[in-house]
Image (tube, helix red, strand yellow):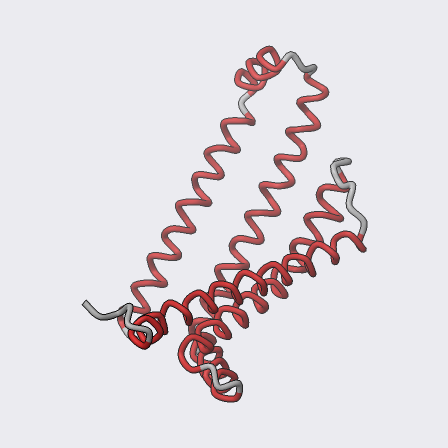
Length: 186
């Protein structure tokens, strides 16, 4: 692995470790009984109500700690085995096939990366919504709504990326268009 890539991974691990430590500091703060009493008084809620919130926060903290370390591990493995290079070559092939040149390569690169990311996070999102939130009585979503929301996210991402790529390709060709009708001359 090139030295710059190793340095990047080291900084990524350090960043993640710092965020995990800050999460623990935050958890220790809200576990403090004196602070809990202050919060209950300030919000005018009973200790039982606060206990429910605290249980949810503890479960959410544990789950996020696990998922964030899993995300980091998958990212490092993806990076180490040349995942970005594979996506880039696939994007170039698709752009060549559809005759879209560099802009098409970029659009396909981010589309593939976004799709892989969404598919990877799907089981974690499912668990968060239908296990964690349901356990604490917060979930009002049905599995059908969950998947409809994911389809909406994909369609919105497709729409925005298409508009962005059209905007880029138009602005790239703007000097040619302007010059062709006498507007680009000084």
